[in-house]
Image 1: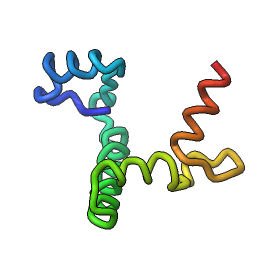
Image 2: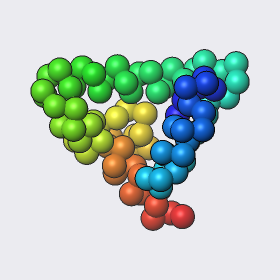
Image 3: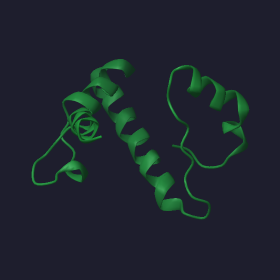
Image 4: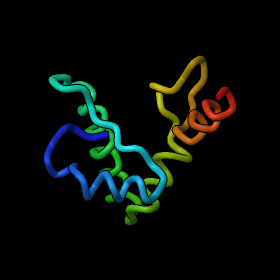
Length: 89
């Protein structure tokens, strides 16, 4: 997710498509949406510093760190939430 900045134009979007992902842009004049992405970046940076590796930080964030916002009655990691959503579709 990104804002509508010019740095996210054609080349970035093309690279995202190559790896099979979709570039989602936040709503115009809705800074709360972009704030979510900024918070993830801040958390990953802290984990990177603590764990010593960007890859380890992302793996920990996605696979081991339970997130309150994904609860639905129980704590889940982003990976668990992703798998549950896939099963419903």
